[in-house]
Length: 270
Image 1: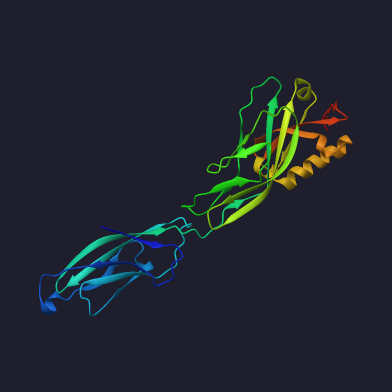
Image 2: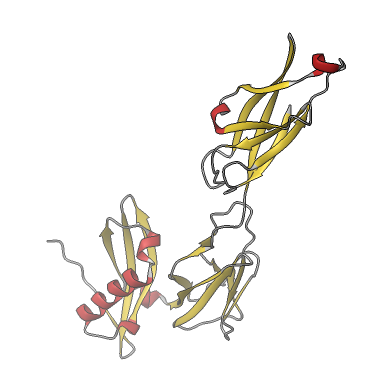
């Protein structure tokens, strides 16, 4: 059995590998012919031979392969024929990944909640980025600030010190796979809660969405703006502290301050 590799996105006609067959006979009896005899993917590959090089065959592609596709390995059977004799070997061809895709990162919110008298962990959340390339190694970084750090390898954000106050902090988050760097807008919302805040909070259900979509900057800002209008206050006084996904909806819990005095929401059934 032979294992061969070809880089993804290689043009049609690329040589995957070269195999050599030997026949101890001499002269015309030693002449070796080749053919792709079978295998599930026989139609995807072809062979090329050199009349001046007996027993040597090149396996070539008939298709451009993508490593991001579901199938990344292919199977054929190569047969060598000399006179009335033949031998068949299985060949597996693997598609090797190339760094041909940029990392993906979207604008996002992070909500960090600390309750009064609760000991907080420094870790906050991971920057939500990924790379379609299987072999990509990502490096994360943010614009330097006094509040948070980022682990360059994992993308984990953490506080530089204990923060016992409410905070809305926009920042820039970036991820790189080496040749490609992409950035996004991000915002950290630190919510420092007391028992009074919890008592004066409200929870609403938003249908046809999930946590990730709700935390999108645009969607989140629309929600906060709607609450601030209803409460006749500034959007900066609206604090979301819990987002819980239930089936095809999310339950969003929040409280509102105005002039340092909590607003109590009463939700009435229709």
